[in-house]
Length: 248
Image 1: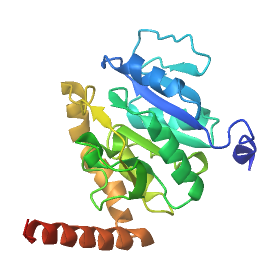
Image 2: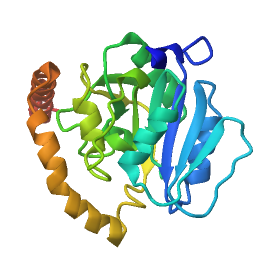
Image 3: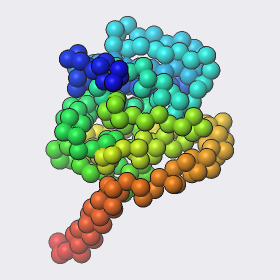
Image 4: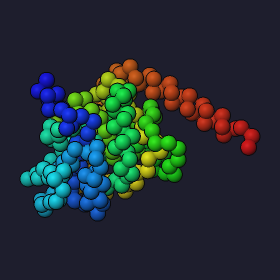
């Protein structure tokens, strides 16, 4: 109840953007500026896991400086606790995108049809069609979805503390009462892991895989919308195969 009271006319329909960083991406300044410059963005919270300080002149940007690297999932949890916007946007520090994504996702979240919304993997290729949000693929997080994830702040479910770098996107998706949505018709670009491909993070990821599996596996098949997503995916695949065999 107290959390909902923090949503008023100044925060309704607006985003708190959460950007964890180790300052290993050259795109961080551009990502922050893109977010801060959009009218739907109330604030940008940069969770700085690196020792070197960061500063922006924009009154929208606030740096949450950490004494040590708390890793990505705890950084999301911290940002969600500090956020004031009605919506959250969890954004990688190495993803470039059309800021129109905030308009498309904001409208979709206001309709209440989807839980977590992120880019479809086609958004990282040649983009066409009207910007929109549709039901996500069955393989939601197979490519790119986690670089720009949006949801209602009140629907954020804190990620278990034992999951520091792996499975946070899957946790947030499975915690929702609504199915995931996918952004189409909006361009995204990313290096896909300028931070996570480092040797120390890869070693930690391998160590945490079993823990993530232990927590996430029991959740599989427990949400009503999983059956819907799989059914729609089957129809999409059937249509694709049919088009492949039609005479040209």
